[in-house]
Amino acid sequence: MSTVPGPSATVEPAPARRCAFAVLRRVFERGAYADQALQAECSQEDPRDRALAMRLAYGAVQRRATLDHVIERLAERPAARLDPPILAALRLGLYELLYLAGAPDYAVVADTVELAKANGRGGHGLVNAVLRRAAREGSDALLGELAEQTPEQAAIMHSHPEWIARLWWEELGAADARALMAHDNEASEVALRANTLRTDAATLAAELPVASHEDGEIPEALVLDGPFDMQASPLWRAGAFIAQSRAAMLVGHTLAPGPGQRVLDLCAAPGGKSTHLAALMEGEGEVVAVERNPRRAGALVRAARRLGAANVRVEIADAASPREEGAVFDRVLVDPPCSGLGTLQARADLRWRVTPEAVEEMALEQQRILAAGAGALRPGGLLVYSTCTISPTENERLIAAFLQSHPEFSIDDLAAERPRFAAGGSGRAGDRAAETRARCLLTLPHRDRTAGFFIARLRRS
Picture (cartoon, rainbow, N blue to C red):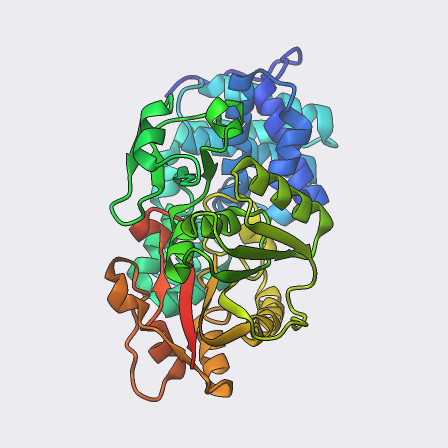
């Protein structure tokens, strides 16, 4: 362990730490989204400083619960009572000391104390004392004493809200819940979908300046093995690919539209799934992509144009409203707004934004959008319902309730088709939600190394 000298009044904090500190304050004091705060505070920095600032800020946001637990242990006072700039400095400094290696401890402490001194109302002495003690005790001692035998303990160890830990404990079992929460704090996989209107995965892989590997079940998918500036690539501008998780690609393959069909995609922005459906249709037929927000609809139009998906028609409308033309679509995709609990790896602050009450409200809107999609599906057609969340309220319970009230619909057994991604569940008699889940797909980030998606396919008789 390196020696930690006292802080100097003349220290100028490193740009990455200064930017990360500003991001933490925006997120926790002003409710900003972490990615937007990073863009606002760090966009002018050197790329290497910006990359480190992102790692520091996102990591400290993700690890908030664990860091606050350590702060309270070392400072001997509740974290919530600390002056917000002092708390931000402690979170930032502790994250780097406990989770990152490379910088000398004295540099981390000196920079963090200077940030606290410049922004707090006193309190920098506390920051100095807590960080010096953390450097002495070390991460093995401070983190090694944490347990995960109960949902409450695991919520601290893996830094999730207790309600999420309890939900997954009940729905997935203790082992999977612990593994999923641990995986949420790792870097997320970066995957590209080769745009088959322009190229294929093998050709794209040979042209990329970064190594990649294919997925054995999703033919368009390429998983990147290193960093890649996508939007600076001529391949991006040529429409050869789009960034998309393998789980999201699985949605399009589950709907499996054919050339010449008429497809409805509700809540379609930013357009990854709409343009995938267009490619699966070989550019023939029509994809009506519905988006309520005009700005997001404009981005969808630009994405379709870049990817050469000329058979995508964007419509600005409320996805929950019944379609005037009635049941005329061969395929319908219902991919409604959801709590996003399957994407916590990629969205640093989301776990602290979602509440149980918000989940219940989202489920009501999801029901309305599903009903509108069902009303637009012709007899004999297929409807896929998908979410990027791991939440039975938004997933199997919602589908089970829909099937009970819509006897003209039945559910396909996707678990038999794609056992690799089966949701599992007992399917015990009388438990409609369990029976429904047993026929659906549920990608799990810790198991499948992609985003967490729920997928059900319904058939109208």
